[in-house]
Amino acid sequence: TVVLASASGSLVSGKLTVRPMGDGVHLTGEIGGLTPNSTHAIHIHEKGDCSAADATSAGGHFNPAAQPHGQADHGAHHAGDMDNLVANAEGVAKVDAHASGVTLGGGAPNDVAGRAVIVHASPDDYKSQPTGNAGARLACGVIKTGR
Ligand code: CU
Ligand code: ZN
Image (cartoon, rainbow, N blue to C red; front, side):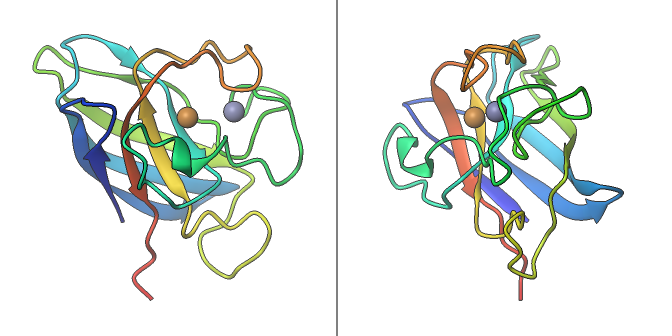
């Protein structure tokens, strides 16, 4: 699971479940406190450290294969790149996100356990380097496997 706590003075928080699926991991759950009908980047970041008020302590996008930033399942991309979230009219995003080329637990270089999930203020444009021009970090949580 991942419990996302607000960062950068936002009211954004949520809880996600992470499961191995296909060629990677799948994140499901809900994130609330977003602007109604807004679109937001969500990524797995390198360090499971959400201690900084602006969550910069989580480092950059998880990128064990040294790839450019991009879109999951569309050519070269960071292992931590996932598709944007869309909030509904109540400011809640139902998360159904996939990160490809990663594992959950086991300690391989592409293991996402112990790393951070971050929700950003802006959408990911899937091309600007190295962050997709996603803006401030609104919420941060560490991926825990429960073992
Ligand atoms: Cu990010
Ligand atoms: Zn990226």
